[in-house]
Length: 103
Image 1 (cartoon, rainbow, N blue to C red):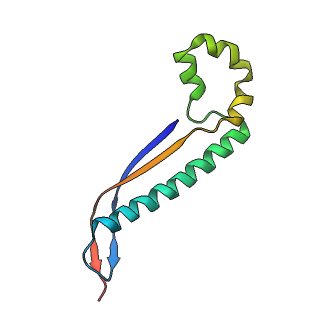
Image 2: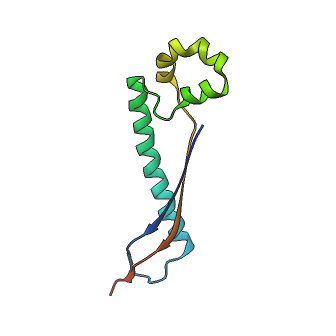
Image 3: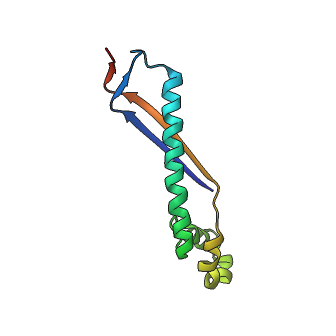
């Protein structure tokens, strides 16, 4: 399981309505989370194709269960190619700095 929790600030907001409401902020956060999820999924797919463990699942298994690690370490690269972690991405908009309403 891979959880990514991000936060950011909208640097510029231009819209007809000068009011920036919670619904719009949530829409921005959801769009940012979807975009980020796409990038992470693409990176994980590329890493899997190369047999690379980009987030350290093997190292975590080695620390948490050394006996199990010893039995699978020679096959780890093959296993990591089929590894599809559950991915959760959340994005929180912490604020906006420049809000401009269109004339």
